[in-house]
Length: 461
Image 1: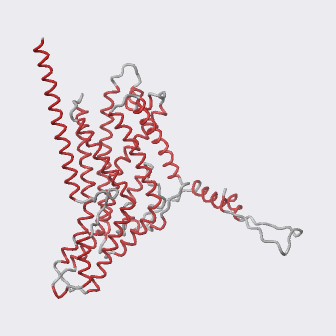
Image 2 (image 1 turned 120 degrees about the horizontal axis):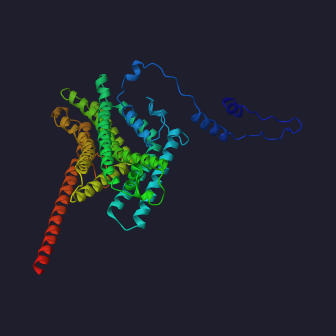
Image 3 (image 1 turned 90 degrees about the horizontal axis):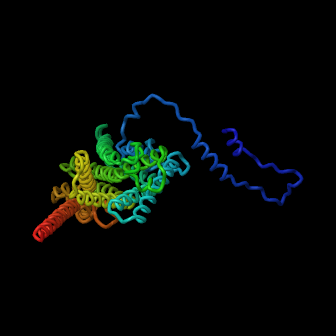
């Protein structure tokens, strides 16, 4: 195969002496097709690299965000999200998005399957009697399909974004020891494990709760067929059940559940990275606040602060849609679960699953808002050092620095509609509590009306 591919690049054009003239132009052969075919074949049929013994450099951290998110991007690619090549390289310039790589074709396959489930759920909701639960199912698959599309668009700009982010990290004050350089990676790892473990537990509880309804179908004797027909009625209402179809349906459903949690986790991780950049600079300022600072020093710190603020703006331009998806999706499903809280549960497992799911939804929503609000909180902290400058040390650069810190609003946004600050946490919490109180009052009024009608009927009898 290498000989065949190499012979294409080594092929030379021979001219016959009879047709060769002085006034003829040389023949130029376009070889872009051969180069594209060679690169595609090499990317598909390359031999795996032999395993080598880990060295000390492999366990060292450089303190950059690109190095800290390698693990979460590896986990994301197992579920067909962010198919970027070169994520394990320490150099962000080696990142690239290849449309012909195995990661890309795996993402195509999962996107095709999720598109099928989305189309069937929407058609099932529109063709039959309109039902709220069917609408929730259609919204769930539409949300995950659009989330996969947004992550694919983000993967196109991810290499350039990581190069810019690494350049800003290198311009910040150096981190003294290995512990300081590894703290961001460890925080991201612990947060990712916690979020995904809770998501896995919630999904397993949903399967246990769904088995109860599948056993109540006397017409289907196969328990697996009963499970899939009761939980994926929008598919098997139109198609006959088979083991392969059942496996693919559940596989794509697991992918959707992972994307559903990964959207929140991604916003949390990005917020942790941006707030860590501000925290590094704030720690450096607190260390030098007792020293005599010159105008040159304040000019350098103001430029570093401006670089991080520009990075927040660039990152927000790429992830603001994902942030909006995270907040809106969580609020929607919290309202759905609060509405379902008025119904009674058939078994203890269903009760545990319902409250566990509701607690996870509220906790994830608050976690996204709190971690995103840290970016705005850390951007305001330099004013604590600037206020301690004595009168004789006050200069023009310090004044400009203080004005930027106090007047600029540095925060992630949701499609530029709102800023992710601590005020948003109070607004979201107040909206949830208000919705819960309205539903409880409505349920009480409805119950009292039903009891009154029963009493009137008894009086007439």
